[in-house]
Image 1 (cartoon, rainbow over the protein chains, first blue to last red):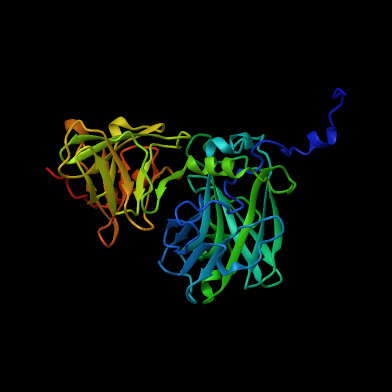
Image 2: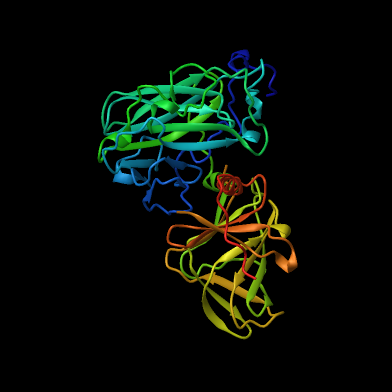
Length: 360
Length: 58
């Protein structure tokens, strides 16, 4: 039967029901390329994919996928778990938060900074050993427009669903490019300098809300979160479940761990460029957000050529002039190579990885 | 403390990337001189604060 009538009610909500509904990537906390489920100290590092752990002072909290092994909320298999490492009193100009930067291309249709700005709705599931009012904020990349928000956890150690609708911002500059369109902060302890009144746009650099509970203020406190969704419209709709492969590909635009663990090959077109150097071109799929940084925890690589099969304590570097968002020219320092020979290389470090990062 | 060391350019080209080392002098990143790269932006901020990277090896 042909479709002859569109439900006007659906159109009038300004909601989006299909196609990249949630602008948050890895909101279900499924992907953890860098750590593969291991705990990391929240010292200004990326934790689970796309989730950055902001910390003015080191070693105040840890982050781990499924920390504490509690049962995730219905419909989810994973969560991001924060555990406080001490009872720390947050200073006025200190900030302990989780952050995801949404690329400008992925929120351009919100039309923020114009009279046509769309409202958005942020929703998530949260579980904490603490109760009270918690906070966060949305910001532009210049950090001169901020919307602090609060939410309440009434019952400790119970999954609570939160929904917050935020009026579209009609002023300020909001990037619609490969730069940061929106910074979305989840506060774990934010000082007064970076905290503002909840529920209104402000011309200030706020990453948290005044009066919010400090997770890092209680030793051993836990704060678990998942199902984070930021969508167009004034209603929180069901979580935007995406295929694992799709979610991983979305993450790869910002970070691609190419090889993880002993003996995993680094699939570049390697050749001996000189007696002391391998050179290899690596295809970036999908296209990365920016020319990437090489990131590696591997410290030893094993190289095979027609002449040798040796280990090298070395590191991989990248040549900017021959690299782009589509490909990376890589170098690995070796010794005793024969220029012109083909080569293969693999990681020779337990638990080490080699990857490429173009995070926001 | 994070430190930086410039890399020699490929085939005699000018330096166009910098290595970043952690407090244990372990190489953690090789950062291209690419304006959109946020690690490069952080490196430029570090330089603007009066810091200097180590020169590239000869």
